[in-house]
Image (cartoon, rainbow, N blue to C red; front, side, top):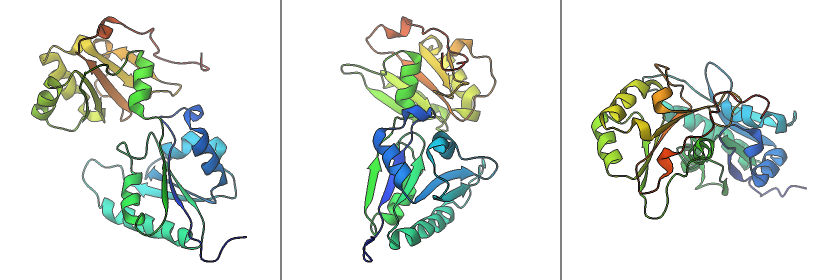
Length: 253
């Protein structure tokens, strides 16, 4: 029996980079028991976060897609999250727990943080960390991210060249995320810095169509949104190691 005065709990669930088996046991327990599930969704396709956990969802669960236009130009994101927060708040006020899905980890460039800042002052919140694309990419590349006193930098691809150049030069290991349409520009920068041979290219990590290649072997003119570059120029000898090519994984083999 529900306590009339009980408010629901807002859960931020990290559901990992794409492989449904990489969701944590805790996230699975909360996901399968929550009466309400919310998730970000594009306006022209299915939600990636939902697709990861689709096999775990129950028909009776209420679903709240948070539709975010996928546009190059800026859109009124504040209004989208304001509206979503209020819709979620209505369920929480009725004592219903709400699980918000976030691919990767909720607080590593995750959209959940925008709901958290709107709702955490009114409702109890719990964050369940997930496997991020950063650590999943290192595992797929079969090369450690950093060690000992190495400085690791995580850089968004949309940063201007000069900012990227300075940050890369100051770090021993670098992950460049959100590569997408910036691929050609970033690749030219890394070529100019003499780092092409030290860079791994990763695309759709943990999914069936995953690609893991040395940057110099990438022929595509444009990378998908879910791509990453991992650079190592520290003291360890890992840069010489090349993993067995995993251009396409079939049947998990």
